[in-house]
Image (cartoon, rainbow, N blue to C red):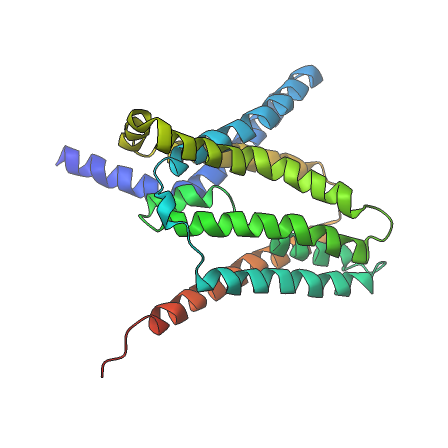
Length: 273
């Protein structure tokens, strides 16, 4: 009975890992804030988090990519549908922002645009692996959407931020963020699969390590986000508007993706003669 209870507790923690990790990240910031640490210590902690976060993402992606069958990296119809949706919404919202530069809603619409622009999280491969999904198909979309963002965002941003930032500068900034955490672990994993099969097999034997690294990364991200929230000079109405619009955007994209998945599943069912 004791073993059964332990297994249920472990399963419960796994099922609720995301909200619990987000809560942990918030608590970490609140605890650090309550300790009244010296400014030098705070600066060192913030600098350390900036180094640790990309390292965690790099490691968990490398571990996940080593478990992927690279022969399954193929284009799927839903890749095109989602790309059209994200790029189309980016263009539409950029035009809306162009004609309301001094509106009180500018920052809120800009946050909505950020939710649409933001590529699929690189860590989503880790979650799909945990759920026994098709990681190769998701990885393919991850590559496509990151490349699309690198090419389209420099085109759309000048529409509502005229003269503030150029195409080349934006493109370089995006590529500098994408390559280290996505493309390099992908290339290393491909080389590992091809030239170091014994190491690949050892990595594949290790279960859930990438998932636990993801939990640490989420906790640090939430701590950083809580710090930014606590130090903002925005008024309460603007903050509430941002929270409402971002939550709505996430829910909308989740529901649309679910509908698309159902439609494609129905369309793929063979018709009986």
